[in-house]
Length: 346
Image 1 (cartoon, rainbow, N blue to C red):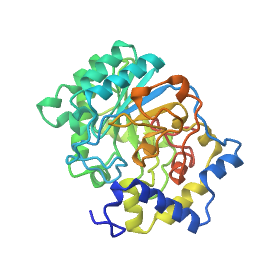
Image 2: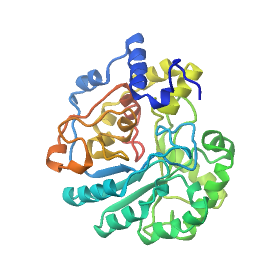
Image 3: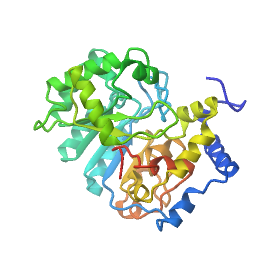
Image 4: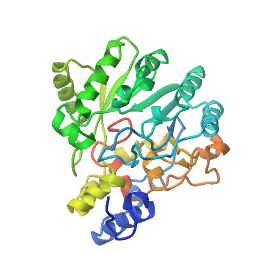
């Protein structure tokens, strides 16, 4: 992909991405995120009880999605080591953290993925995996993943941009929609997505362009109706706003929509959404063990504040009640009904 700045690739330069967002904010005389928090009586934004450890196992993926904020793909090499994974497990135990949220890339492509899941489940930790669905069809190595998920009662969270082939394939690659349906059917056969089985399959919707997602419940009903026609079921639908970073930031710049999109996010700021943002109860870990307030801050190289910077030095006491690091992209999580890894927050 060509550079938009004449030097290097924007996607690999978090500092340049933040500079672009700051420049747009200044040019459009937009309110700062901290300024909006202050007006709402929420500044400084601080963490609450640590409930979720979100672990990014790396950037290796079998897909290259246009909206991916991780810039993941088959050519990436970054993958979490067993040493760092053991530090994450130790943190879960020491911090009595009830939920492990595993993401990537395609997290299943990390060679220690199954070990992490099994060890966390031994501690009775709830495990969520952000699965791209097509990995379940990516060869014999991954064919038994549905059974593995079911055995360990893993909650599966999967992106499905739309209930039609054209829009899904446009965002995630040719043939992805049909493969996703096949993968969902395999999960459904084991009880995923069905009531009273305890096997949860949630889908994730994000807009195909520079606009906010519609009402989450309305979209869920629409998805459920259309997907049932295709023979698949799921539990809930999460709507997630596209963050103006990485590949989506590239798209906004190429199409000339960045200024308007950022202004739209700022004008849609919702204090109730800000009060419930995911970074308040979540700690994010990158593939090398560095700590961040959220997965988006991770991609912008914005580490947590305070003295603890790595999972290897985990201290719940020192990490709780810390100030959250913010920048203009944070307006994405506080626009309208809000956005988080669990969907709308209002």
